[in-house]
Image (tube, rainbow, N blue to C red):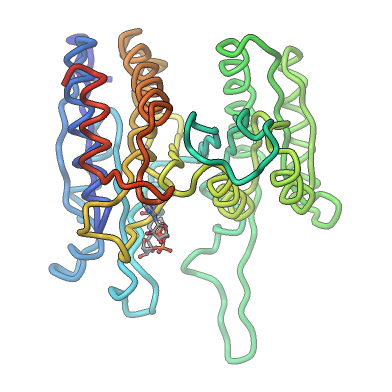
Length: 363
Ligand SMILES: NC(=O)c1ccc[n+]([C@@H]2O[C@H](COP(=O)([O-])OP(=O)(O)OC[C@H]3O[C@@H](n4cnc5c(N)ncnc54)[C@H](O)[C@@H]3O)[C@@H](O)[C@H]2O)c1
């Protein structure tokens, strides 16, 4: 890490549509936060995305990839545009390329009820929703992405689970549970979400997970079938802590989780590997509201807080962790005090969220 002077290099990939709007908003909030905590964030904005593809024929220039790889962390808005497609009919997806090329196996998707933000369930316990999905992001059913077999009569995609990645995913999940338990003053619990009753691949995954679990006696561990978990994320979402799972299962369950706590505008994410990490909101480019100034930047702000926390854990210094904690707390306090974005039925646009947070951070 290029630190020592308390400064880290952040590659910013704003992308398309509201990706650029929530990126600008996030940088505007990070500025007073960094000043306040005496941390240096040297940002470099890099071109990539659907409109870049339309203009140049390249969705993710190699120079942008190399600059992002060389940075200490990557902050990404959102990329893609439904009307802009490659010759094979698919959209460009640099965010997926980054996961594979940088080995970002742990897709961390917190699902947390924010004070003042409506939750989908009437049960008062839903205000205590605070879980994290850890979506394996390099293999599973996405293994054959772009190479699946398609003939006149059938189409076939391959699911792959490896021991090495499952071990890393499991260690990551148990360590995350330990950190969360320490901060919350209670025991941690890791529950593998699988389909081990039907598929050999998931029985294998469960065996590897159980082997890792024995190394973390201070953390409870268990398993839950994915179909039962879909039910229980609606029936008792407050009962779960850390939920590692296969790529496609995690893709689906994390949107369900977002729906529980205010929607995509409140759902941050991080794609983390051994050396690199990308922090981005879970949502896309929202063509239906792009350019109107109403995009909710909260998901990207919370992703930026995850980035500061990750940089602290990587050795950037305790000030980064303090800044992360203050950004999370400022978001909670602003919504707790009545900030209401359009996606939850309010009137506050992107600029109003920025103003509310800058106000709390002395900007
Ligand atoms: N990581 C990524 O870059 C990423 C992820 C998902 C989709 N995409 C791309 O984004 C484009 C649109 O996809 P989509 O419509 O399926 O999903 P989307 O997440 O962009 O939008 C779904 C719905 O949620 C709303 N929404 C999303 N984020 C919001 C926010 N911050 N504030 C307020 N409302 C918000 C949108 O207005 C829309 O109604 C597609 O081209 C898709 O490929 C990119």
